[in-house]
Length: 239
Image 1 (cartoon, rainbow, N blue to C red):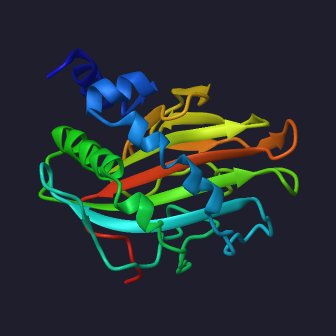
Image 2: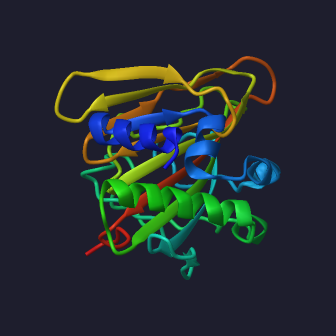
């Protein structure tokens, strides 16, 4: 095990979260940064999110689901809705949301499959599980009509085991400060993700997180992220 992976695991176990630069992610997870970068243009083609209950028009997204056992290939599952209980999402909880699936160009890319598998493997080193139920969200938050809100639900947990927030890119925006706090205390950190393919990995039972609103700093302001959630107990769904 290399030094970067050891540090990732030690920090995630101790603090409940860890941050990785793109270079650290490459070394710790063995991911293909060039292959991921080749997918960046797909964030230009995300459909608008029509479910925003705050009346905004600042988010575009795609969503797909997978199952992966540690050390095994990633398995796509039939397209399904995204659902969260109100206990974890006060704004959109209880709402069955059907988003367009992630494009086949992305799903078939070796770098994509490698990324999801590598994160599943490292999370299984923190918490051993037979398989992960993974939800993948491509997000774009833009400022074309004013303020963009990456987390309109506010500080939250996601109701899963682990969350990976990966910055794909940002342009012509100010704001977007990420905040991670101990779920049972006042301790926390604040930082702004700037580098493409840098990552924030979180133990969802131990921390809450949010990202502050974006303001335009020029035309075409946007922040693109990939959010991956890993849950051992199956996909979240209405009872």
